[in-house]
Amino acid sequence: MINTNNVYVLAMIIILSVTAPWIFISSAEAIQPSGIVFEIKNEPREHAFTIKVPKGWLMEGGIFRLLAHEIGGPLNATESKCDLTLKSDSLGHVYFKILPDIVYAHPGIGGGFFPVGSGYQGAEIKPFVDAPTFVAQVFAYLHPNAYIPKTLKIRRLAGEKQALDQGMAYMNRMLNSIGLQSNQSDVAGGVFEYMEGNTMYREVILSAVLNMPAALTWKNTRTLAFRAPAQEFDQWRPVMDIIRFSIHFNLNWLVKEFQGQDQLARKAADAFREMNRIDQEIVQKSNINRSEIMNDNFLALTGQEDFINPRTGDVETDTDAYRYRWKTPGGDMYYTNNEYEDPNIFLHQTGFELTPIRKRKNE
Image (tube, rainbow, N blue to C red; front, top):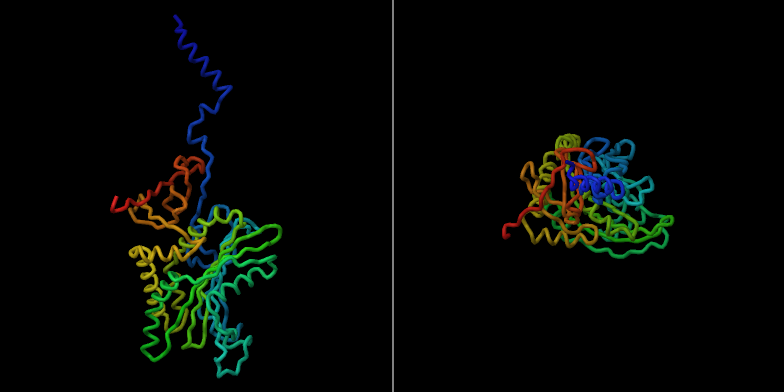
């Protein structure tokens, strides 16, 4: 005998599968991803470092070198330079830039016989400027044709300066030990708005300047720029955090770089390691300093969070803008605030594992 109840249930299933097929789609398949995938990529020219790049973005430029015999001297030829742009499309509606360190000579160099604007040993003669002024100059350089430019804010960054000064302490002790003046730093960030084409942009520019009086030179360093359409800036702001803090240098490349410089290479390498160590201590061990640095990096550089790598157990510091963070063994990342998004499903690959937020000791 046919069970009429079973027939009724089967009929309902057939009807629903035709009239309401969404009922039979699994929750994972129904989810539309809202997060961002990041890939670990090498600096393209010399593999000097790795950096996290949003999937689909373009990468242009990279490490380059100036030759002393072509620029008139060694001041800008003793170390490599980096001019790298990551951008969301060919027009760069959203971009992240690393600008090169450039050495300038004080007007008094060469006995004062070289006028401002001229060259001396491969460096332009240019009066030293503080970091806020330099940041404004970088904006003018990047956007000479900006329409209705507006400076929203420029201010010094005490936390960034502290990290830089402590990193220079080793070198300064060496200079003082032979009776020379210490190097001094200044760090600032600026927020600008301007029209380009038909789009209103907001841009954050960060830079440090180092005054090196013993050598009668000065330079900019750690110069970064990040922009997005003004109305979307807060949405894109966490991307700046992720990219900036993801840079990891290739130690083999560093060794070769220092070996290619002058006889102070070993001391410079020691200074770099000391700077790295102090930076890590500030980030990982001192909550006060860490909080100060994050507060100083207004708008573009905001909150961070500690995540646990499920494979290694290591603590990994990253942006707190996304509560759910996935990682592959190769370092590719996926960030989202939707707990039901599994990148292994909609990216059709395996290997992504969730990196949980570190449990606090007082919990």
